[in-house]
Length: 114
Ligand code: 5GP
Ligand code: ZN
Image (cartoon, rainbow, N blue to C red; front, top):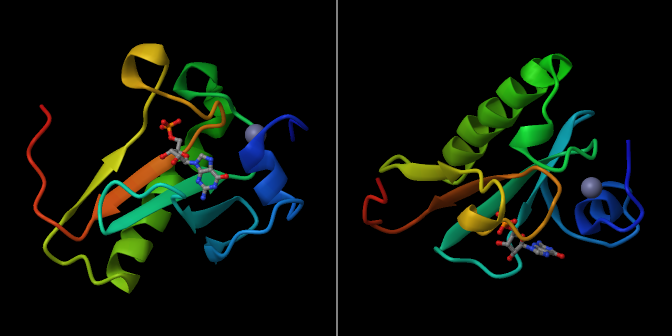
């Protein structure tokens, strides 16, 4: 379930302290250490899944829970004007932490990327 070398696994196990915005048995959310927008939150499953490419069919419910958490946090943060959800996968997308996470970005007008 955990990888000892992984920073998000360390945070999941409270071996590295971080203020958790949300936590339940499946996932937690923290502020990004290097925010790209005024609100930049990472929603992270507790179990170590390196990327979308490593998802198993068993993980489908978990992925749904990440998006449900994003919706709840967007309400908590009053992001009624909108927000962006991003999952970087692999080197071309700039994935730097190899533990699946959903970025929730908001609090400012953003240019469309696609
Ligand atoms: P990626 O580029 O893999 O999609 O995103 C990784 C994100 O994790 C980056 O935005 C980076 O700033 C953030 N990050 C890396 N290490 C830590 C950490 O120790 N704590 C927190 N809160 N964020 C981190
Ligand atoms: Zn991990």
